[in-house]
Image (cartoon, rainbow, N blue to C red; front, side, top):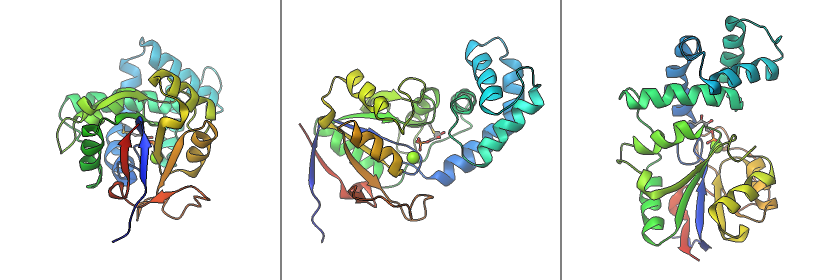
Length: 240
Ligand SMILES: CSCCC(=O)C(=O)COP(=O)(O)O
Ligand SMILES: [Mg+2]
């Protein structure tokens, strides 16, 4: 049996896709749910300031004219989904659609089998838990509420996305999160499947662990000198 190091942290911050949950589920079930609903959702929420801003940002980030029609906007959104581009306006619109799908009982979330037992164990030891994902906070909360293992939200103290914190590849986003959580950078521990996110968090002074899961899109990524695990069961955390 391999011995694993013990990590000391006040808060563990979780990435979702590829880390707690399968990318195939996000890009399959969730994306398939959102794809045919994007157009009608935008039309029926045309007075929602968040949707108005997301549509304008889609035009600008997607290289469209300021007055490009809805078909062109939806085509850009579909293209981003096809390539799993984590564009913030897409995440805003998807997040609203998914939140409605979870509320209607039409969606359930997915967590790898090793995740929930470890979240419970860390939480029971007094380690605080938070989320930082490209998925909007509007979708993160129901994602943790509608798990097969039950409602996980009582364990999760805070949720951050690219709107509230900034890019996952910028150190400043991690500084902002540590400040919001009221923890020194060195007492935050970030778990993610993307090396660029590990680099940014480490630059901000965080402890980091790369999660390399067999069969996930980033399984073959170069994690450099970052510590890497294949399962949460290898991560032993005690509260600082
Ligand atoms: C709340 S489930 C949807 C997750 C999502 O849309 C996403 O892009 C996840 O990206 P992550 O930053 O967690 O890898
Ligand atoms: Mg991820």
